[in-house]
Length: 330
Image (cartoon, rainbow, N blue to C red; front, side, top):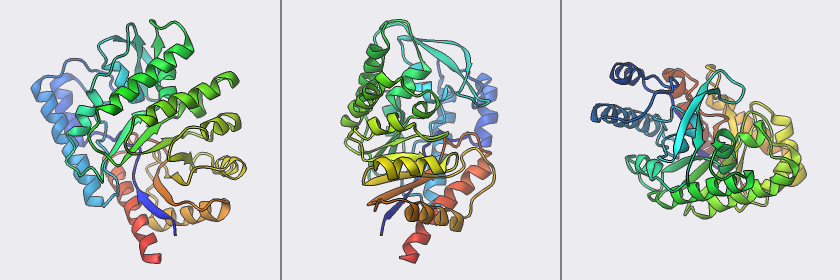
């Protein structure tokens, strides 16, 4: 019987009270793309909001607890947007949806900042339950503008080294989700696929945890997926909401890791899936693949900040309940 682990890719919506309070403090709402120096009142509001979303996960009995990434106004670009050697440029569209972020323009050497590690260390959860979340190196380099390194390959290496340095400062954690939607949205050129996989491998090698490369907003093109399989990671994530058939094709044609992440809950739709529906989707994947997975992370396909808070919380509960249903069925 496959072990089911209920979790999420992070990037949560701000609690409603925090939207109002932060708006008054600094004209800020999630997605308004306003940041900068954070005074003690702003930091306190974020700390209380973090406690709220951590409590929501614990109350839902999720198997993995994430920090929530409530400060990540610039989405996956956040770790660069707050770096001292990066200038934030104009507002650009976040892939093909109606969310936006500021273009991080790298102007000097990327050295580890400790910003994400500090956030993760503030989570009130045991290391056995804690899950770290980072952009993958390919997606982060794709979302940024290089004004220092001068070469795409060198820039990707620098971003990978930067992320590996961030991971090295993390507190003890059980799982690391590397979010790589650019592998789908802006696929590497044929001659860059191997390099993208090597960059992911470099970040994964810095982690003392199970590493999941989670992709979404479609399926990974075949050549890119075949190279991704060379990365020494524990699981690859698939978006079974946006493109189930091609995701199944990749698994059946090229295989996958012993563990898998199944994006089964729609992170952009307010319709809340029932635990039974999620469980049916797990069984559908299991019945239509040729792989016996040791572990399946059941999760939303995308980040969850798109959702109203009440729907976000309901989806957490549905994921956790789906994993519980599986234990009962066993």
